[in-house]
Image 1: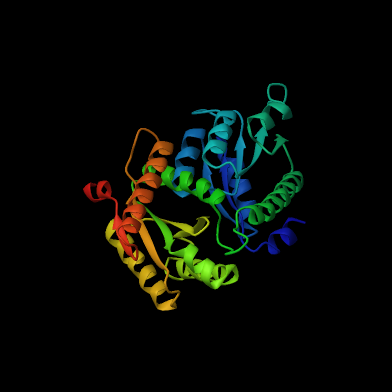
Image 2: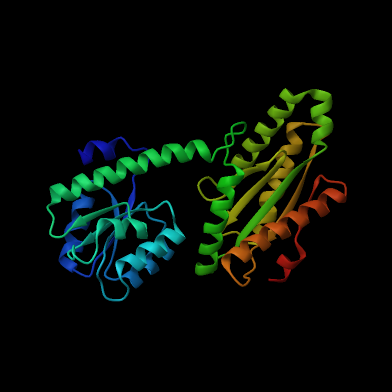
Length: 307
């Protein structure tokens, strides 16, 4: 049952198993490894959060409810704050103290009572993976821009918060491009909307080709505006990527249109959310400076140069 399900997946889920019982952790880890699944383990809620921050996000969290160093319900709530899409299977040997409703209310997707057989565990896990597959299919439809087929603004808002949180925690640089097509209205008015659509699709293709696959993340922000998130990239590296995008677009010959690109680097503020909002604001302002200076150029946010 589980074997056939996993074999059909285009990408395999990864797991974090959390329990203070070493024997149970070992048993579950070895069971999952028989399906060639990636598994990390932790003996407490505190350690689980550290691993999640360092190696996450994880597709599925399997956690005990009663543990030293942070109970499972608290862990579930915190994981759902960090990564709402993580599926969670909770375990407990204290059925009288923790019911299904309490655990699901905290954010878990299912609850299994200890002691349990591997057959029961496999059945519960298969159900969770099926639900994850369905959610992934629905998500794929909701986060893609219909015209360009790259990610849309809704998904950008989600990824921005996740990338900002991770960059601040792990201390690596994060840069953002705001990109606007100069003279797009004129192009649309003179060439027609069909040609305008072809231009936007070509720009999306350029952004994908000029950035690192599965690392950098291009999005259509709206209309003729696009954004690109560049994790693990400093200003010098970001400028090289932006120049490559600008040059490649020029070569495509969509005259009289050009690109205005604003670059900003993440600066820590009072919170991750404020840091993310500030990053967008500074990149947007840099882009408008490029546009107001005639377009067809790159502008770097002044504050970013100071850090």
